[in-house]
Every structure is written in C-alpha cells, then in structure tokens.
Length: 597
Ligand SMILES: [Zn+2]
Image (cartoon, rainbow, N blue to C red; front, side):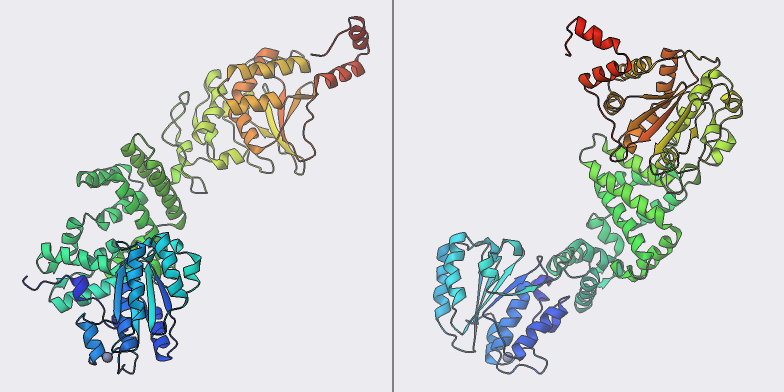
C-alpha cells in the first residue's frame, strides 16, 4: 500500500488508442494532427469521466512530439514527450474554471498565451469546466480566442454545452464525447483487474460498470473500493452487497410470479426486498429496468440495448421467451405509473403492492379483456350474488353472473355487471356500430317483454344499433306524459346527484326531446357524455319511470355531429314557439303586459 495509486490515475490513458469508448472521436483528432489541420480552439463536451481531459492532454502531447509514430501516436521518447510524461512540460497549461473563474485568473492565462513555447511547436491551454467562467472572464477571454498567436491552441472542456455562449461556440471546433457503454467499461475493468492480478466475475464488473453510468473515472474508483473490501477476489455477491445494488435474482423470480398470476408470491418477494433495507422506489425503478431489458431481448434488432454480461443475457433471453409482448408493454406502463405516483402517494407500500397485484393479473385469462386490460376483479358490486361457473369462464357474458331470483337483483344485475367489467371494451359495446348485445339472464329475458327500457345511441353517419339492457320491473305502468313533465323529471334527477358535476352539466345542457309517446331522444356532444349517462343509466331510468309513472318508454342517446348542435332556446325564443303553438298565449302576454325576465 506504500505506493498505492488509485486506478483512475494509474490507468489514465496516455495514447489515443487507450482511450476507451471514443474511437471515432480519437480517430478524427489523429487525422487532424496527421494532416496538420489544427484549429485554434476546440470544445470538448460530454458527461463527466468519459475522457475529455485525458484526450486534451494526449492531443497536447502528440502535436508537440518530435517523432510521432506511424499510426499517429506520440512517441513517448523524445524530449517533449518525456517532459509531458514527467509533468514538467511548459507547453501545457491547465485551468480549472470551476475554482478559477474570475477575470484575474483569465488575465494570468492570457499573459502566458503571449510567451511562445521553448521546445515543441504549440502551447496548449486546457480550460476545464469552461461554463463556470464568470461573464466578465468570458468577455476578457473572447478577444484572445478571436486572435490567438499561431502557437496557441485552446481546448475548452465542459459537461454543460448549453451554457456556453454562442460567441464562444462559433469559434470552436466542437467534439461531443459519448457516455461509455457498459460493455466497454466492463471490458476495461477486466483489463485493469488482470494487470493488478485480481480475479473478478464478469457479472460483478458489469454491476460496477452499470453503477458508473457511462463514466470511466467513476467506474475505476468504484472498482478500487470493491477491491479494498473484497481482498482481490471480486464476486457478484460481494459487489451487490457492498454497492447496495438490488440482485437481479429478485426480478427474475418476480416476473415468474407475475406470469403465474401468483399474487402472494409477488407480495412476499417485495417484502423480502424491503426487509433487506431497499427503498420501495428503488425497487420499482429496478423493476422497470428489468421489464425493459426483457423487452429488448424480444427482438434481435434491439438486443444491443441490453447491457448485461453474457451469462445473464442468456437468462434474460430465456425469461423474455416466456413473456408475451402485451404483458411486457402493460407491465412497463404499470411500473412506470407507480414510479410517477410514488412521490405523491400517502401510502407508498400499498401503491407498490397494488401495482404488483395488477401486474400479476395481466396474463390471467379470467380477468383480462382481449386488449390485455385487467378487469377490476377484486371488487364485486355489493348486490351481486356469488359468481356462477359460467361467469368465471370469461367476462364475455357478465349478465349471467347473478341468478335472477328476485326483482331487486334483476334490476341491479346489469348494473353490477357494468361495475365489474368497467373496461373500455365493455363500454365500447354501447357505442354505435358494434354488434355486441349482452345476453340477459333467463328470468330477465322472460320479463323483457314487460319492460322494454331501451337505450340506443345514434351517430348521424352510422347505422343505429339498438342495444337492449333489460332490467325487469314487475308492473306495467303506461301513464301518458308531456315533454314538460319529462323535462321536469329529467332536471329533478340532477338534484339527486349534486356531486356528479359532469353528468349534471350534461343533463342541464342536453334536454330530452320527445320523438313519440314512448321514445325520447337526448343529443350530447361527446362520447364522454354518453359514457357518463350510461354509467347512471339505471338510476336515471328508474327515477324517470317513478316520476312519470311510466315504464314503457325508451331513451335514445345521440352524439351531435358538427352542424347538428342543439339550439339552446332563449326565453324569447320559447315565447315565440309557444305563440306559434297557441296564439292565445300572445293575447295573455299582451293583456297582462308581461315581460320576459
Ligand atoms: Zn515524442
């Protein structure tokens, strides 16, 4: 430990070739040196630890080398190279703008620019974190950057390109450094390990590489940490324990549980993870990544996006085979939703558990619509009796769910079915153009004739498709009613549901219109309004039936097309209409000298 040098320094690249993960960029620099087309200012942009400063130093050394090698590298033997390697060269001046960002700092630098190099051709000025320079310092620097002496080359490095003034950007050749891939980092770590005589499992190095997120410097310092606590033998287990990384093993088990619709097991795995001290949000983030990794395994085109070691990649491939694509899409969506809701949730553990339950239900045939949307299987509506075996076989015939033995259950029954199967596909069944007609229960179909309460929805350009929802009522009531009575009853219903703002607004703006003695129509503007009325359909109809003492009428819902918008009558229009119908009204109006409020 006497001469211990951290790996990030010891293995800092000293030639273009040894720079990891920036091949295209180093090649371009080499070509520029080779063809002697050097710019006076370069801007190196990119995330931290990807080799910007290293490249700047290698560049400075190479352009001053007296005998560059055939493949464009510095010789490391001439006087200039030796001075560089021994860090005594006057041809390279570095300024860290993060801590030296004043005008004075820049002035000192500019003074040095004027002095030509004593050996070699160029003086290279590296300004690190250049975006940290104060505005005044920038301005002081600008003049020099515009007209530098021929021996001066500036290399500006920054992690935040967007903060660089356009005046500076336009004077620089810009090089964008990429974040280094996990595979490249892992490979380099393997090289360092072999140089140091350390044995390391590939998965372990992969975890370190992932943790470093594209930065080699971070990867090497994490590597040093791991070496110090694992004593020269780096295993996957020791790495995940010490770096607080969640073992992918959990996720493989969890996805198996999802595919088997095994809710208890999924919940227990989550408990195990929490018991090991991991944050729930951290866990959800990992789950999202695992699902994403499975997804990229499904297609050879996206396979390069998988950043794991070869042996684990095989396991991902195997599990991906078992996962249907709709499952992965839906699971990713649920996992992401959980991540987004996590911060605002008051009961975070419950949120995660609910998400796991929902993911468990995706591939469950009992609870899945053709689109892969989970049904709300957990909460049966209160009035519904035990589901019959037919009902368990599929959600296609939800009406069969309850034996219709009393009038009360008959009335509430289709409504209960709506609640249970409140998914887009069921709601669509009430849309025009679809032919789905729910099968009524036997008793209800016997009573159908007695109570033909119908709902049908029209759209002007499509054929109407009457739907029959058939709550049975025991007694035929057929009291004639007027449009005024109907409207009064219609508005009366809105007072019973003051909190249903959308429905109240819809019903107040869309009034019923009588078509004949037993049919009235309602024109609404959107499908949302149709859905909204449908949701309260049974309550609304029984309210109207009760008020009007008539259960023989039906309602047609119609979505307005443009141009068919319902005319809202002003009180004056109403008066004109009334006079048209009954001229006596005019007499009344004139006689009493009435005014419209
Ligand atoms: Zn040299």
